[in-house]
Image 1 (cartoon, rainbow, N blue to C red):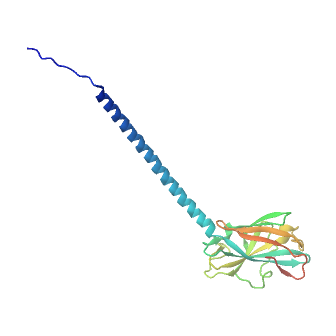
Image 2 (spheres, helix red, strand yellow; image 1 turned 120 degrees about the vertical axis):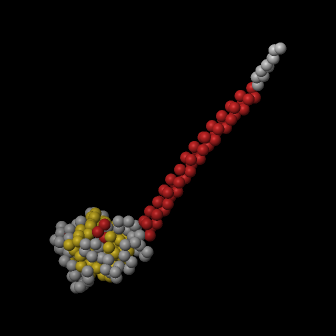
Image 3 (cartoon, rainbow, N blue to C red; image 1 turned 180 degrees about the vertical axis):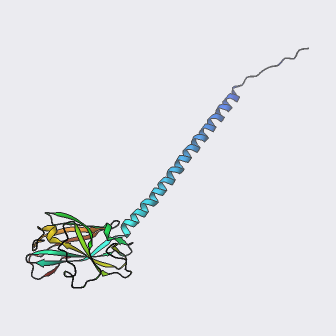
Length: 220
């Protein structure tokens, strides 16, 4: 007695396997895409945080110029004193990493701190305490006015909250031939700033008087 086996072929099974393969592939693609999106979001978040920290540092730190005076020798200003302090809430400012940028519309100079020119007190008046005749058109000196925590020294001129220092400039060397009384004449437009390593600069902008009648003149 023989047994007859009948086979039935249906397309529904193959379609189900194909759908399953497509579904698995879509899940894999979705997983890869989700991983990429998460990694991108993490990277953007870190970048945003770093940008925020840098922005806060640049805005919250810096120097302000509170006063500028000049010493007159004959017909020109031969010395200039720039009073500076850290802005309120600023971190400490290292003046050895700062520079002064000055222009009188005809000449521009950039000056850096010279540690040979440092006084820790104002002993004989603003323009008699320090002999700045040796300063040139690329250097400035420092006179200490107030330093509560003794953070500022000639080797490490760091100023912080409520400190006041004077930056001394030989304008005869910067805007003349280096020999008094050459220097900054009358009706001269001067612009520039004191630039810390990080943060807001202290702005310098003034026009010298049309005539010099005394030995010292307030410029800003």
